[in-house]
Image 1 (tube, rainbow, N blue to C red):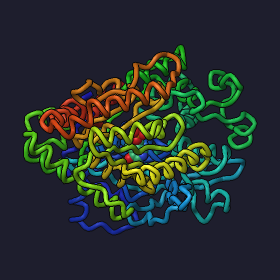
Image 2: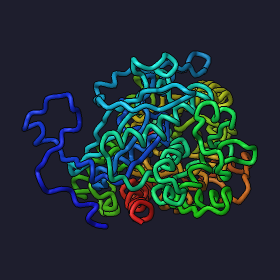
Image 3: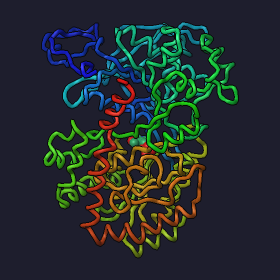
Image 4: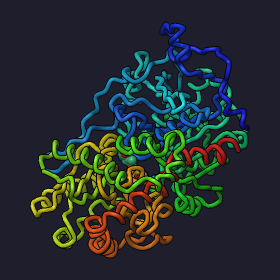
Length: 586
Ligand SMILES: *Cc1c(COP(=O)(O)O)cnc(C)c1O
């Protein structure tokens, strides 16, 4: 098993990155080795957020995929990854004067980041032969090992106009469009890897049900369901039944007639083809993304052996420059070994505070330059940013505005920074944004400076999770599968104030790593906005704001524990270790 991790010592170079380009000897010499036959893990995801300048992701799922691949590269896990190339990205979010989200296509130049490969494969979609090519993006790990990501693209001259658009938009279009994309990802993914010469792939990891059709393609190769199962790993991310991808049988028959309808377990109770059930059926290793989410998934899909591997974030990506410098000084090698962040407990409180002040200044400067609101470096700053959707309850902080005002008057000054996109089809989410943007203006007029930043993306997320004083999270329990933004925050010594759900059930120690809101989750959904809001206000007023202003020593103690207890664990190095041991080589 360990042999799998040996990188080749020989100096035979494979020029595979671009067959067309001339590679000088030095060029090849400097390029880290990649032997296709060594690669054993294929990781497929509908979105991958790997570079903050590439709009190939929408949010948490894609960034998790990117952070996972970065950890593969750091840890020399012999993997390759596949996703789709979105010409028009997800969308660029503007917020107009009425507080409404306006979606604009993202303009970007893919050839600045990746190279097209000459190989083409063909897939039959709706009876048409659709050509697919791959663009290669190379992720280089902390020790120089590389993991390629192949972004699949149907925007090729030989294809009809309609097929050229299949890979244009992330999460755009109707269910037919989505199904076509999933065919390109799953079926196209397996075929392109074969075409590119990855002949020893042993595990195919489906990151959520969007990639499940890969099992259909593998079934053609292996013939036996059990044989496919040995090669498949499935990760589910959604604790709500409605969140799972489903397609009408009629649609699937029309678009992908070869689909194996005879397998009964993959239709749900309404007779629809359910991509989660498909992934579950064909995978020997299945996991949820936090302990609690594993439990919920086992209840939701009885009979399947569902494990859990708690999510993480890529430490080097999500640590601000000032903390990077600090860790470099006190914990040399931390970026190739995220576990070593536990030693942050030995860093002086003064240095922690100063590193935070730097990150906070960057954020406040950004806010002030975009909003002319005059936020203060020294005021207690609350951050909230995530996809604007009902279960995240972004409006909970505004549940009782008078109460919030009293806290700001008596316990200490407060300022608030919000951000988040709503899915273009989520009417309710867009309404929520509008409501919050208007509440921001109202609160600001009442003396609590509050902004809603436009176009939440990896860049804004980096600034915010590092620069605020507390990271607020208020989902309706138990709907948060894991959540990862709080993990980004803890890498920067920013404690969470959060509902006990997802990862926070594992990361929370009251007054040590942060603070909880409301009770433990029960089996059934329990939504008591009044009780949760009251608890949140109570903690802010009696504990958190006073601690921030009056007891710097203890406050920084909490910041430091957020790093040593939580960043050292909730990172993708630890997570990938678990995937390797439990899922890939098992
Ligand atoms: C981290 C991140 C998310 C996911 O955050 P959650 O806490 O899991 O909701 C979404 N969008 C962006 C841009 C992020 O950086």
